[in-house]
Length: 245
Image (cartoon, helix red, strand yellow):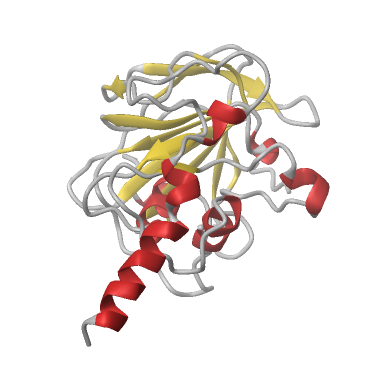
C-alpha cells in the first residue's frame, strides 16, 4: 500500500556599466571577508553552496540546475530580478545562514516553478534513468503538491545516481531535504536525492549511472526512504514516467 506524506550609444554604455557594477559584489568572492577559516573549495575554486558562472549561463538556468527559484538567487546575491550574469561571476546558490532568520524559508527545491495541475512538463532529453533505489513507493508525484516520489528501503542502503552527470550540489543547506545531492545530466535535466544519512560524493564530482552517491536516511517519522525528484528546464517531472518498469 502506498503511503502518502507530506529559482543609442551613451545610454547603452551606461546600461552596460550599471550591469557590470551590479555584479561587482558577486564577482568578489563573498567568503573572503567572512570571519574564521577559509572554507573548503571545490575543483572550480568556489566553496560548497556557490557557483562560478560559465559563458551562456543565465540566472534562470542556474536556478533550475540547483533547484532554486530565480527570484531567490537574485535576492541572495543582491541582484535585480531577471539580472544578466557574467562569466566568472560567483553566485550563492544555497540559502545563506541568515535566510531562516529573515522569513520562514519555503523548501527551496520543492518550490522551484511547480508544474500546473494537469499540464505535463517536458520530458528530459537524451538520458535514460535507472532506479536510485529499489523499494515500495511511499509517496507519488502530484503536481503542485509533491514534486517527486519517495522510495522506501533500509536505512544505510546505497542510493545510486539515476544517470551519468555532474554533482552540482551536495550538502544540507535545504533543511526540508536533509543531506541532499543534486546531479546535472545535461542542459535541461537534473535529478535530486534527499533524506540521506550520509553523502558519498561532493560538488563537481562526475558520477556514472548506478554509482553510489549517498546512504539512505529516515524522515521525521523515522521511516527510511529517499526523496527522488526529476526536473526538466526547471519544471518537475513525474519520475515514475521515466524509470524502467
